Length: 606
Image 1 (spheres, rainbow, N blue to C red):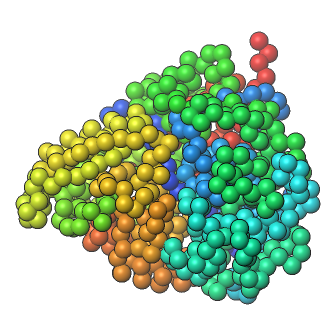
Image 2 (image 1 turned 90 degrees about the vertical axis):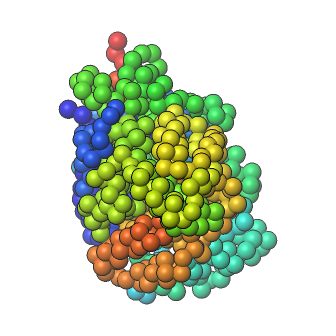
Image 3 (image 1 turned 90 degrees about the horizontal axis):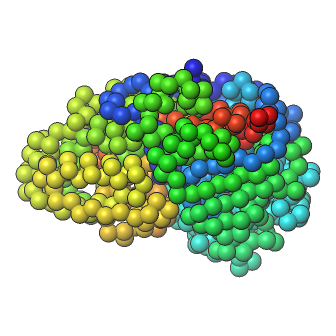
């Protein structure tokens, strides 16, 4: 049997949140494993289940060390096979999964998401003594720092560092990380949050005590104009992990950050390798979320999914101690991996929260009929087969994952689930109505194997429907930086989004709020629709999570049917192989991958 760990998140204490969490990096640059010519409507070994709320932990549940993994042994080196090298190491710049999953080994924040041995999830106090004390009907949150917490240079972490960490996210050079907390503090939904502290703290300015208060070295109080009951979830994101006030080198911090977690960077050669070794200033007694069994992580980059899968299947030499955080099983080898018991024992599977879409640049493709023609033309089966078919995902009708509350099964406004091969005739009819046959589209994708395969399918389908496609590619490491430029010169590009916690409030606003259009932001299609903006503001004020979930899905319908700046493609699955001498490999729904905090090296007695 394979390690199937797509579980319902079970309550692990007294829940005080309105909604639950799957705290994940919002953008993803890769697909899951392969399954040949599957139809994407099911199969692949896992099923999506809407997840329940998870708990906010008190001080007792936030005390380290982390729960021991049964059978785990300390020591040894884990080899990690990755395709993409991190473009950012500064936690404030980290938001995509390939960076986040490595960063989680190095960085800690005020809170963290913990999965225990029974599969229960909770938000625990990480550097803080608990998940936060709320007052003033959700408008104020107080955090107290633990004792014996340090940066990797040995300096203690104080409330001044927490304040600095938050304030620096307002600085102009921080363009890639999450913006939830900044917007909440500024009481805005748009990019104008920076006006609250335009230069960050670097010119001597600070947020007033009425917004962010540090009454002593151990205490931090957040004050908001509106209730923000999801703050503990947001603070668990790597993007809000701790940055030293004294050690901050601004832009240069992206190359040499100080660590607060169990590992530090010994060496990093971009696009080639990274070595992580133990952080001598990390105290496991303060950390309830990380076990840190291996002595070292040797991470190498440039591994295609074909390469990493073949190496892990062969299970020779150092690859016996190897795993990947982001490379799924490749499509070519997926049937063998899925059917051979030898590999099933080393296979970790789960449903990810990501929804793959094809973003349409609304600044450039302004006619709705042309955008609808793109939607009808796209063959979901051909696209998904490039990433692995049913083993890798399930056809999507909308923008909201089936894991989320409010999701409506069977939503299919363009008939894509029933007709996944696409409808080029309907697409051409729309182009003729718009007098746009021969419409030129500049389409960019990245150089990853699966993305390149899918791009050929997309190009062929669009040209059959009557478009002229100018296709180009960019390296994976710079892909999101490329499409994140507002004036990027492209009409089409793939965009993957996963909810940051269990609410569509982390799906719709970041991608479709027209007030968030700026370089580095996540409104990749540059849609600025008055109805979307006003609905975002209205739904955010709804305190009943079930009602809010329904309203978010209704807004999703308006975006897909009446605006259409992203064409839904598929919902992600992840299938990860590991070497025979890796223990503790379990799928973590929060991370959307294997839980890197639980793995250990099995001692080879032979």
